[in-house]
Picture 1 (cartoon, rainbow, N blue to C red):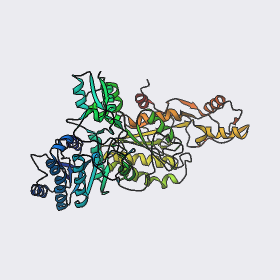
Picture 2 (tube, one colour):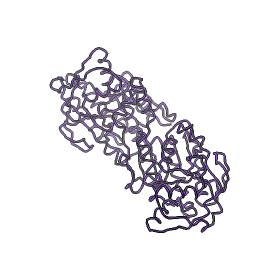
Picture 3 (tube, rainbow, N blue to C red):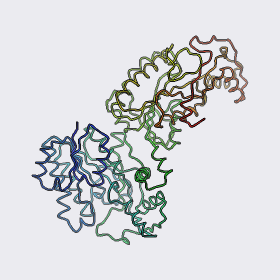
Picture 4 (tube, helix red, strand yellow):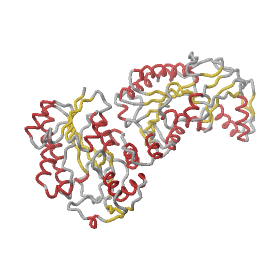
Length: 570
């Protein structure tokens, strides 16, 4: 069990840490505030830390009243400078990792583009100066440290959103500063970053703010709109508003190191705000439900035949998508692209992909060549990838299956249909399904095995018979060799399939083996004739030129009961 000491546990970040780690039975929290541990007293800090012997110290304690710091400079210096210094010395004594929370106020605010971790400091206030000096002690003394620099923080306790809503109860107009630009940031989103960093040894300084930016006035307007509060926001300048301390006019931070070193993207500020307000019951129910269901989804094989469509469907549904592949020429521009190698074997692969809520594993070579040896050769890599994702903490996994796992079968395929695959493709997929459910049984992870049938659509980009017909028509061929066409299959358009995959993989009610299908058997001949007619082609099939494959059933289709419930189709 890992032991984490938190200072300033009653602040917004301290409370968010407790909320987050309440779901982690392998973490023991030791909560302290000023009455339990005075971080400005070096002897007390050393004695306490030596007694507790934590693995991690998270310093949330700080003197954060910016205007009061101007009047109480000595106290601000002791808490914001001496405190981190004492914790740095004590962390070295017990070999603990020190996580120290920093501020955007270390910058002067004169830059016109987001600040990077390596930018020079130039604080314009006592508060900013003390935070800068506290950071300096951490970097000079602590052997293992993370400085997490955030801004415009809100969580449980006194904060900007709750203050504005309280004022709105008494006023019809509220003056809010319009010439200070930053990134409103949820404390809970920062905690997720802290947890991510603490699972690594990539020590250093990291920016951690929600994506996007706005002014305080825009922040207030958005807040009132989301909560349906009828109050007028009156934009004023900082000079008109008047404050003892100088605040940075522009303090947008770029999370460059999080993006570059962890491929981690923080939540967009409006989405994080909606989740915060929704959790507190302060906003429109329909918007809250939408955000509650919004997930960060990793799609492997994102530039493949099916993958491109799944990525688009997920984005259209409002999810955040991490697209993983080698090339991205066909991937929707709204997705975050990732070139992290699926088959590196790295145990921290879940962290490398930014800790998604869901992984849809579509990546698979030679899916249309059913007896290619790559199916078996690649199988260990798929197993290790899934194993490492699950052990890393992935909560929900969807893997692309196939009807070919079943082998020869007549009639509807249900989740209980016995499997006896007769191709290398079917054998490999069947084995991966069995291994995946075995791995998941040992962890608290939801698994959806999405079994696909006969796919058509996006014709030139697939390897199906329909893509070949398009090519032959363009070549001017009058006929093409074909089998009898009597076999009946469950045909589904790739766009409909992608919607089913996206919906099934991100819902929380129905899991296990799910047939992504129509549930309607149609003969191959009928479907080919329909395809030719719809496209106005002249080419004709030569029926009987090829024999039917021995492992193809006269009629096979998917039982669509589960997917219809998921898609809410009666």
